[in-house]
Each structure stands twice: as structure tokens, then as C-alpha cells.
Amino acid sequence: MNNKSSDRVFGYIFANIYPLYIQKAERKNRTKEEVDQVICWLTGYSRAGLQQQIEQENDFETFFAQAPAFHPGSLLIKGVVCGVRVEEIEDPLMQKIRFLDKLIDELAKGKAMEKILRQ
Image 1 (tube, one colour):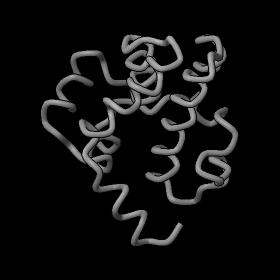
Image 2 (spheres, one colour; image 1 turned 45 degrees about the vertical axis):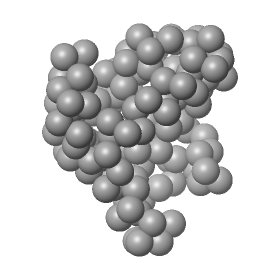
Image 3 (cartoon, helix red, strand yellow; image 1 turned 180 degrees about the horizontal axis):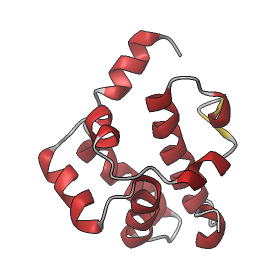
Image 4 (tube, one colour; image 1 turned 135 degrees about the horizontal axis):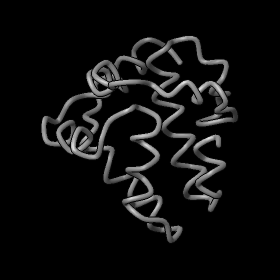
């Protein structure tokens, strides 16, 4: 991915993308609560902290920069998102964004929560 499209993605407002994650999950009979659980697991946000990020309309760069504790289990996330292997993405911020995309994909595909959360 070139820098121009990376910069554009980093500037996306998390609050604008969040409902799309929920819609994707709900289309496959998963819940908003499960989406929140996945996001909180990955980022270390509490539910209240996640809600605050949404209300502040922070971009992805700020959302991940302010994340309390990126989960060490995220290094176990492997696979392809948008034609790119997430474990091979060099830009740390883009990798975090794609890790989140991958977890939402797994949720929408009906994977068990224990597997999604790498337990």
C-alpha cells in the first residue's frame, strides 16, 4: 500500500467505521457486544473508554495511539485482509488497523470467540 492511501486510512474517523464493523457482524448473527469485546481485547480499552473514543470522533491514528494496552496476543493474528498478509505489514499503525479488520472478519465468519481472542 502506498503512503497516500495509508495516510487516508489513518485519517478515517473511527466512529464512522465502527458502525460498519457492527453491521458486518450483525449480518452474520453476531452482536455489537461481541464487536466491542473484540475491540476491547485488542486495544485494552474498557467499554467506557471505547465509547469515549467514538464520542470524540478520533481518527484511527489517535484511536490506536491512545489505546491503553495493545494485546500481546495480537501477534498470533495471521491471515489475509484486503489481499495483504497482516503479519507481514511493516507499518505498525496499518498493521494494527488490519489486525482489527481481521478479527471482525473472523467474528463475521462465525469463528468461536475463544479462537478470535487467541485463547
